[in-house]
Length: 429
Ligand SMILES: [Zn+2]
Image 1 (cartoon, rainbow, N blue to C red):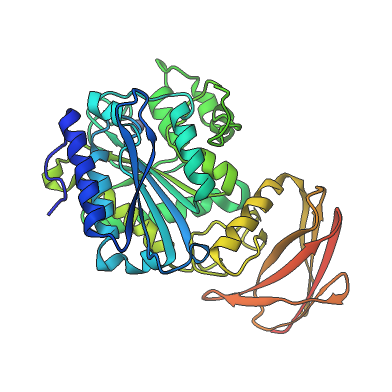
Image 2 (cartoon, rainbow, N blue to C red):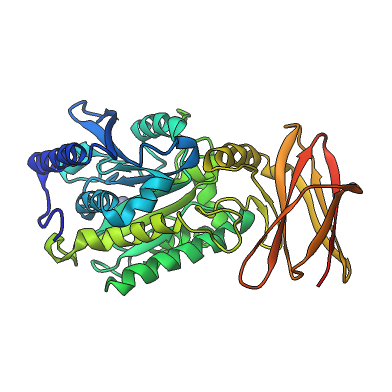
């Protein structure tokens, strides 16, 4: 049974969503809390969020997931997806999610737009109001994962598909630290999960989506530049970290881009479809399922990650040799990640050399001045037995973890000065 088996419309519809949220918090007091993030631009409406988590687990030991919906007021599908996600989060199936994550759901980012059933938003960056409310929220809850829900109708689809598709968008990433590949991998897992329940999804990059909307002969933007991944990061105001007031023109669709730039957050955009799927046919469920898949992936350990959680810890390099944050719980990892991610432009060498059957050399160069700097150097090894690690020829601590066919050696390092760090790894078969 869907939470909403009809489409909430107008002022009455908004009030129905809001009173459903209030009832939800009353019914699930143990795990749920309401927060008001701010007021709509017309000052008429609160913008409420619901925080769902196991309150007995300290915040430091949990990851943070932020789910936003309805930033574009006429994208109706989002109105029924938010309650469906909340309803899942309160279910017994989501117990591990509540134990390991603080999940914040903002079902209606743009209440004014929903009442008017109009876009009422910005095509160039996020709005001033969004900067303010997400700036405040993320200062307290820097997200490890952020997903932003939109919805396509008859006329909002791409140029070649009007009115039918549902899409997962690995959005607003760069190519640093294999992020494109990692986001694609996760997006396809989300797709597989939804499709098992009978909801066909497609995965499109943000570049694809922009090209479909704006490219082509009659397009508003030149197609060639849309093919450049950098294009979107240029048009996305780099100062737009939910904080700066400048208003650069540029297209960005999803709320989560600034979170990636600032915290190396795992970020997704979503497009449900309210033209082809009615609420009573399961529109809410079709949007909830990929989100559920993502939240549950946040409890697991990805093969290349040292600990369970969203795969956000490969900050520089690739799967064979990479720089990682240091920390023993999600809170410590988050702090370290934010600091190291900012330094990514100052690492100039990341080298790996197989000297002989028993020795691998690794070298790391740092040009910055954010010192001392703690980080993890991580190598994926064919060899199962790692005997010894030396940093500048002195014995050093290390740990290992495995995937199905290889061993990762994780070496904590403290950089005291700019320059090169040389690491030797001795191993057996
Ligand atoms: Zn939209």
